[in-house]
Image 1 (cartoon, rainbow, N blue to C red):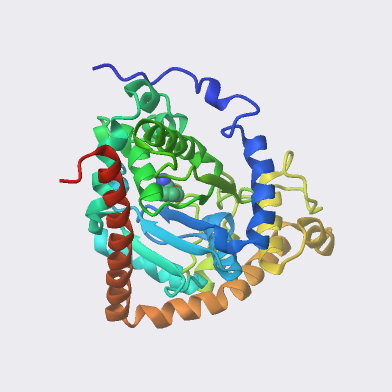
Image 2: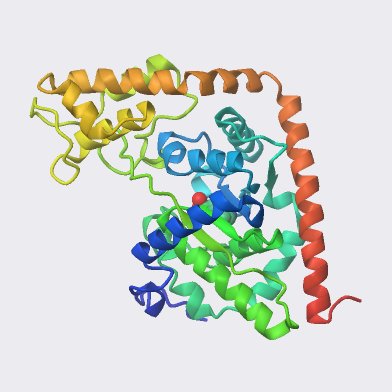
Length: 367
Ligand code: TRP
């Protein structure tokens, strides 16, 4: 079997389709309106790989958005992707520890277990069983040309590429479709996976559906948060060692930000193209303070990078103080974390089993 890994994204990536970022952005704005008008129409599924503690990039990129959706009254499912993370060999070392850290971060930022079902892949057999019929609906070529998977293969430090690497996007479709979510808040890198999910839903409905299909075709909700850079001026990412975690103490935050890359121009101005590192620190400060980066820059003026770093440190520490306090509190009660996860898994199992029941009935395999 040859798996095609070097073809371009193909027609699904061209302008005007859901994969095209500007189209997805425009559609997301319309969806935002609709969510505000009618939150009860939506069910959200989103998730993370358990790779350790979440950082400020996650927080401003996606986590804030989840809490906002929850507050609007949208029903939410959050999957801790403990099977998908197996594609990431170097971090899949302490699954239960990583899962607990993730749950702690969720609780700290304000996800409320009464409104958000937090669960793990491995605890929901019906979810995993959906993978098999779903795989029959996609071609090897389609799996092979997923641009996000191709990137992950290119940047992975592994000597071989596992079958899971090519199939996890279909598994992600099972995450989303097992609870019939119709809205998936994601970053741009996840758009190919969402497109595959829509394809799977459509093909399943076409092949097996009666008048009404079994599955909705879920839509992406792109957050409009701009990208935060890490302390070395590249994308903030745990594996690059340039991230500030939510759980970091205030001294650690100060130390990391003091070491952040900047430039030698003492005049601080917001110019993301020409001065990305300075712009990212301004953005971080602004996001924490609910201001614009231009306002922050105007305050600092000619005081230089040291003053900018000091402002950023104060802003981050102040903004995260209540989150860090809540995190520390929950961290003292590991029993509660485990109970919460067990209850989330129980609920996810019920929902996924009901969906699998419909899938079996539609496929004629309900014996
Ligand atoms: N693929 C996502 C990531 O790498 C995590 C994830 C798993 C996910 N299942 C999901 C995201 C379903 C959105 C919906 O970060």
